[in-house]
Image (cartoon, rainbow, N blue to C red):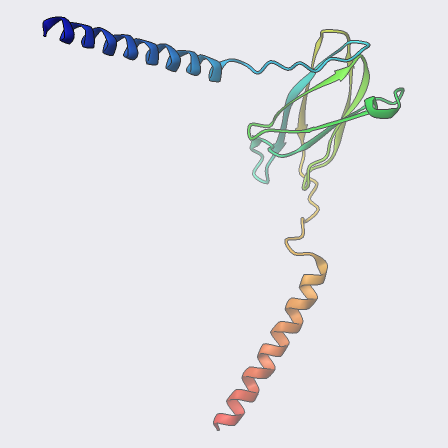
Length: 168
């Protein structure tokens, strides 16, 4: 019986050790930077950076969901235009073929900004944008909704008056 208990204890320790190794490898895989396997025939590199914007009270904050466009004025076809969006922390990353790109950001509520970036084979180019507010109001509703809301308000007012007349 003692051999059985010892063997069972060994198996339990072996299973616990294997689970610990699997957990550790999974944790390390999640923390590892992503490996991008995008390649271009003529070579290419990365463009990365951050988009910031000044708020109404002059605080500098990272801007999320901003579309970043890289256009190559010389190239044509599928390698002439690349787009990506910023993450929650304002960061963006894109891989492009070798060339010189006009990098443009134009989020709603901010003044659009462009910058030229050169990319060589295997390089990493950086671009950081600091955007000012455009002071152009962003409509919360489509313009058609304003007129629909006004018609509904007038109709509700007339209906309320009619109902109140009937009670007198």
